[in-house]
Every structure is written in structure tokens, then in C-alpha cells.
Length: 267
Image (tube, rainbow, N blue to C red; front, top):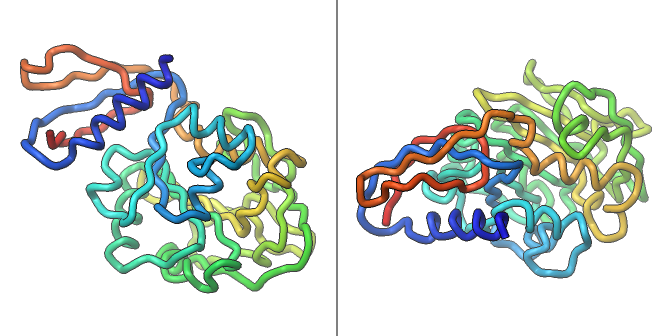
């Protein structure tokens, strides 16, 4: 019930972004709930269980967090967001790319799960903005071995990821960015998982989205990896309250995320 109320409160907040302005400062605290924004595209929604046909790990993300699908990434659609999850089912405009960069710099996590199968080169423009590039497709299943455990993606709230299984993945990531970190490798030496810190946030580059389908989600440490991606705030330990102004809304309430964010509520 608590999770449901948290999600309903956030949904109400996002649904009212169209009328009068009330200035508020959110100091939001609870368990490990994140506000997740993704693309309004069937393939992407499918992995987040918004279509209802995925397995337990996908359902758990949807139940534990507030998930919203948007048509365009901009300052309004990313307001109050913790995690943006995208796949390579479409490309992004220059304005969207810059909005996503600003989102990361401000403390958000951007998860890019791409293998270039649905839409070749769709994410190259976005990846290039972070000085990251993709290779070519590999055939068959590939096991990625984790090489970096000093992060909360491979060593996070759901546990430690030693290895994960991909299916027809991209051969690897390349980067000229000195802050790019290799977190996992395929047998051929290709980079399977990369991390990049930018400003106060982080970009997670995955070379395949198939580790999270119904067939592979329960194999090796795929489910742990999936859960760690979205429990972005669970390692934070300081819960705080919500203070809403003006006096017409005097009572603090909890939305279910950690951290502090100053926003303008339109409603």
C-alpha cells in the first residue's frame, strides 16, 4: 500500500504540470524508490513490464518504482526524474540529447541499453555526445565478465554481478573520454558494460538489451544487474521530509525517493 500511495502521489504531481505555479522544495525520503522515465515505444515499455508480458524482475521494478513513459525528452518531461532508461528503438533530436546531458549533469542516471538490432546507429549521436561509440554485432549468446566492482551497478543494492549473459550483443564500446570506465568484458575483449560519471550523475552504457528479456533475465547475474540499474538511490541513507509552500499545502508528505530537489509545481 505504501508503494502504491507513493506512486500515486508522484503520478498526481506529474499529471498537474499544466496550470498555475506553486514554488516548492522537495526533500523527499523513503526506501529505495526511484522516479524512472522511459520512451513511449513498445519495445522499451515491454522490458519495463508496462505491457504486462514480462517476468518477475520486470514486475518488481514497476512495483517498486514510479515509471513514466514520455514521447519527448525535455526539461519538463525529466522534471523530478532519477533514472532515464532508453533502448535503440529510435534516435533523438539535438534538443533531446542536450536535455539528457543536462539531466545527467544535474545528478540523474541515464541507462542506455543498445545493441543496434532494431534501429542501426540510432543511438550513435547520443553516445557520441559522451565520447562513446559502439562496434558491430556478435553472434549467439555471449557471457560478459565483470571487471570493476567499485560501483553500484555491478555491486549494488541487489547484490554483486560477477557475470551476465547477453544475446547477439554489440561487440563492444569504445571511448576517448578519460572518465569512461570499463565495467565488464566479453570473451573477445570487447567492452560489454561501461560507466561514465558526468557532473553529479552517471551514464550506464550496455551493449545489449537481451540480458533482460524473459529468456535470459534469470540466468547468471542478469536479474541482479537489472535491479541495480534502477535502485539508483538505495545506497543513500539519509531520509528527509517534503516541505510544500504556500500555507494552502501545509502538510509534508513522502514520495519515496532520496535526496533533495527544488522544483516548480504547475497545478
